Image (cartoon, rainbow, N blue to C red; front, side, top):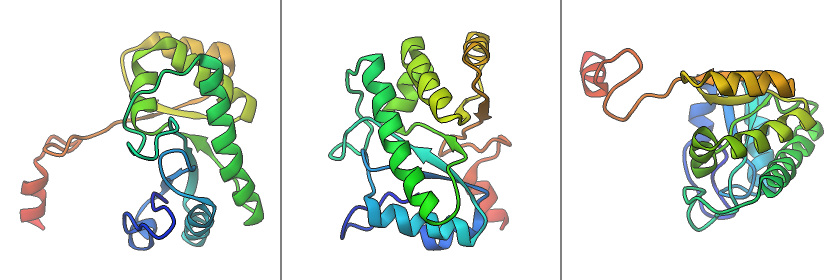
Length: 176
């Protein structure tokens, strides 16, 4: 959510926000800007939607979908910076960031590289926020999160072709 940038409009946040319980809000490195973040936070507040920081690599041109080589400290710093910006806007609305969910390549890299995962844990611990990750059989990640004192929120993702229930989206749409 909040992935527009300046005059460039992406998505339909005004129509989607009333239908969700949690919104991962872009924090400026892959999309968004202060005005877009403010509008998106306002929408989330209006619809009582939980706000998640959606930090990424600094990749506006690639929409955060390109892996960029960062040191673990650079990853921690980038997540602190982006989440801090969103948190300041939330405070202006008397609300708060509830969790961190990395975007795009940073999310994928985190799931495959323990050092990146640990850099995100350091940021989450510093901010006292849960970290959202893909539900996997990687019990080592559970152990590391516990060691860092960070709560994990686990999500399941469906592909474009198949939903979590195993049904084709096309079949679901036809049934509607």
